[in-house]
Picture 1: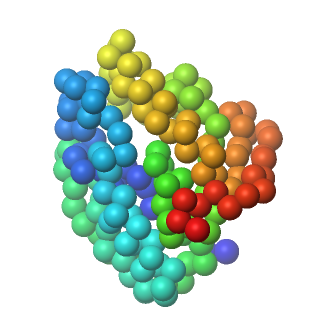
Picture 2: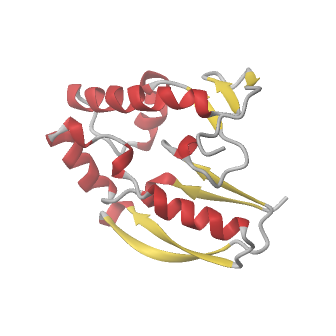
Amino acid sequence: MATGILQMDDYFIFPSKTCHEMRTKNVDQVGMFEARLDFLECNLRSFKQGAEDIYKPLSLYAENRFTTEVKEVGDLRVLIAEGTYTTTLRFIDCHVFLDRNYEDTLPDRLKRARDIFDDRMKEILLREHKIIREHKKLATIVIDKDFTDIELQRHNPSPWA
């Protein structure tokens, strides 16, 4: 099955390094308002309506800037929106929540070697986790932190239903 991915990092308002600097200076910068969720929604809606291509932002991490790319989606059967706040999106058929906290994701973050880990970074990740953990109730499927157990939530979690 032809599948594509839209990564949340491409939809933040500021490029990664700038976003990190802003968060470091003021932890109140952390939250859903950091992302262009409306732009991601627009791309998902276009896909669901049968668009051949979507125009989307693309984060150039090393250059600390965004560009735009044309992503061919016409032949895709599945388009995954991956990232922090995606359980709040409307144009999703199934919301999946990975039940992991910032400590569980730390080894992966260290492998990527993009972040400087200090007490301030821990404070930022803790704040972000407090926001994200509330999104678990919006999920259709919850996967545990070890990826060994899957829970199907038997309700309509969409806040838009």
